[in-house]
Amino acid sequence: MFYLTNELPEPVGYVTISETEPWGRWLAASIPLGLHRDVRNRLMSNLKHILVGLEMKAALVIPHQLREQGHSLLFEPYAQILHFEFCTGVFSVCEGLGSAQYLVDTGNDGAGGDRVWFNQWREPLAAHVGAEDVQQFLTALSIVQAVRDKLHQDRLGARENIDWHAFSYDAAFVPALDVLQTLFTLNSDRLPAATNLNQ
Image (tube, rainbow, N blue to C red):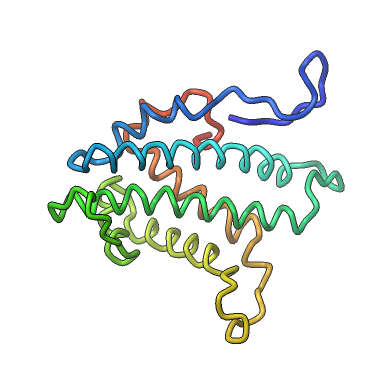
């Protein structure tokens, strides 16, 4: 977990009490067996780094949202971009776990590098994590995907103006955190004790 402090004797700035390694225990239990060893190792490495990055973003976003009236911690456009980045990271974690589940379900170890599409992995992911309300989980996941996709710059002339309200705490960060915390119901006993993502 990352957090900010300006209180002495703590050092000023970023303090970390969580690194990538503690996420390995949860990922080892949560990534379905049946993937090629190299594919599994790369996926675990990628997701560990994404999860630690999400911890840092949450450590900025949540205190900004819960601040006292008039005491802003983040410049508002930066907060919106952090919400977008949080959604992008959550989507990547879901995509990794969901794609792995889809590959294993279809007897593929992933070594061939086959592309797995969103509509192929979303329901296997929901089943894998045992989402209590599958439709609610899939709806929140679709919101996360929609936020992630809003800033694509590949079709400037065809893209509508971005509604920046879609990047708000309630519209973007909360659904993404809900999705992530649903994932964390899987093997919850193996989560890092210090993470700020499951509080």
